[in-house]
Length: 194
Image (cartoon, rainbow, N blue to C red; front, side, top):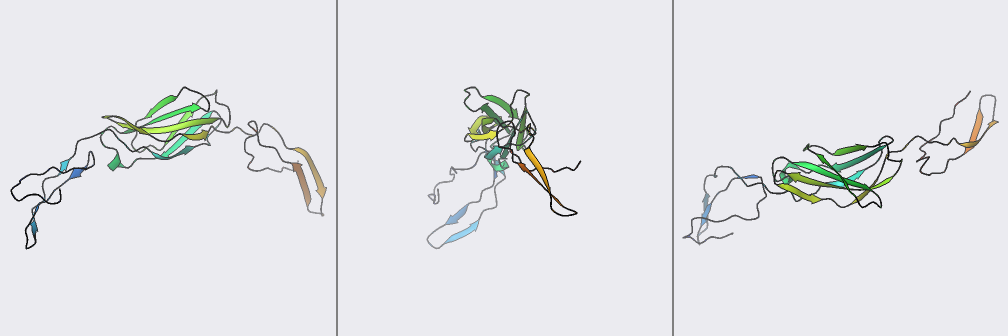
C-alpha cells in the first residue's frame, strides 16, 4: 500500500517477481512532509515459482539432411522464477497427432537439433518450446512451422548449351530446376569447363 496508518508497524508488499532479491526502506510522512528513509533492509529473495514466460522467436530450419533444427530466444534470468531452469522442446510432423518431447537442461540454450534418418528433406513440422524449473513445467510458446534440413539437388539442370560470343568469351545457358521436395531450394548454379 502507498500509505499506511501511523499506528501500523508492518505491511505486506505484493506483485513482486518470484526468485528475485529485494531490499526495502520505510519512509515516515505527516502533514508537513516526508522524512528521511530508513536504512535498507537486508536483501531478501522471494520464493521460487513455476516459470510463466515462454521463449520468443521460435523458428529454425536449415541444418543437414535428416535434421530438424529448432531455435528460440532464451528467457532472461529475471523471468526464470527459480533454480533448475531449462527448456522443453516439442515437435511433430505437420498433420500428426503425436508430439515428440525433448528436454534441454541448459539455461543459455537457444537451439535444439533432432537427427533421424527417416526425416525427408524439407518436411514441415509443428514446433513449440516451453520452460521448466524445479517448481514444475511452465508456459509453452505458440506453434510455429519449421522445415527439416534440405538435401543436395538430385536433378541436374537440363538443356545446357554454349554460344561463342568472342575469342575469349562463351555464353552458357540452361533450363532452371523447378522447386520440389527432391530439389529443395536452388540457391545458385555452378558452371564448370571441361
